[in-house]
Image (cartoon, rainbow, N blue to C red; front, side, top):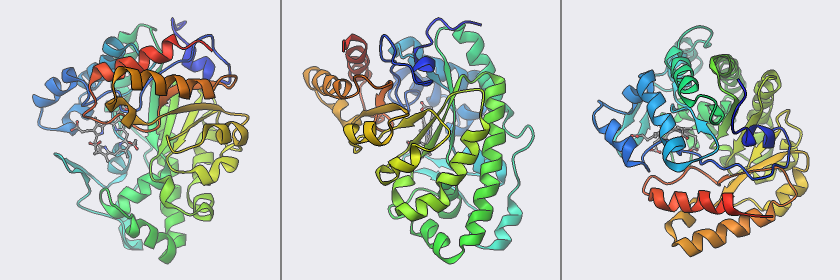
Length: 340
Ligand code: CP3
């Protein structure tokens, strides 16, 4: 069916659109009181993720309440390591925790490649969202990049230094490649199923890109991202690699059209080094703690720098959970009002 608003799809194919499309990473979630209300009735985050009707409902909330140009399916990147064999818990106010982690070759026995119906609840949620969206805006599917998923499997949660994951690369590089291969195959199967269920475009989050050295990033992350994007031929793909400013030149060679920028990345430099790509981003999410004038000014400054380059407006990372939805609306309005 023809989409009523396909701005983001056209921009993600390299078009300079008549108006710049806008959405926010982490738009579905704690910034909205309507989300917190649903969440409060449940046993936890995972119940929300694993109940398709509810996941669909919170996916649609930002479309209805914030008027963004795309929906992103409500889920988490951590459903992939879980479906592969390492379950996680989402601890209140602490974040993810994996009781079992990956340390030695024996631990590989716990893992399998996602090939079947392990993540049917996500595909079901996508189908419900597509029906309810009724072609209003496109739906974004997503997954973590293999390196970022590997980091969680090894660390067992968040970390300040990610030294366990980086130790693994130094001490057991061959084993790391083996695991990354398993994650890559799983992620590709998972994303293909998301697309079959109705995802109109796909984003890959490499949240921990920035902790690797340039040469490690070239060895342990980029080739696996490339394997995935090369095989997703039917939908536009965005790669968001937080902190990977050192890899812009390499990222211009990825077989995807769109690259997400974080707020530390220099837009002029990105336009030069990623000349062939659509760019997504990159307002500092902290700007949304400012007043109306500050938000409008910063948004205009950001938008001006992207003039003449295919662009999807977004923040430079996920919106912080304590951001007031009115501040988010000011940002969205400022993007929509912007006239180049
Ligand atoms: O709106 C959307 O963007 C869709 C939903 C979404 C969530 N997580 C929901 C969520 C998406 C795209 C993600 C991706 C994700 N998850 C990433 C990559 C993006 C990034 O921020 O770098 C990462 C690293 C994770 C792992 C994760 N999930 C962490 C570290 C945490 C705890 C910290 C936090 O933000 O609370 C989560 C939990 C999580 N994922 C919540 C939501 C709404 C909060 C849980 C809750 O409501 O109790």
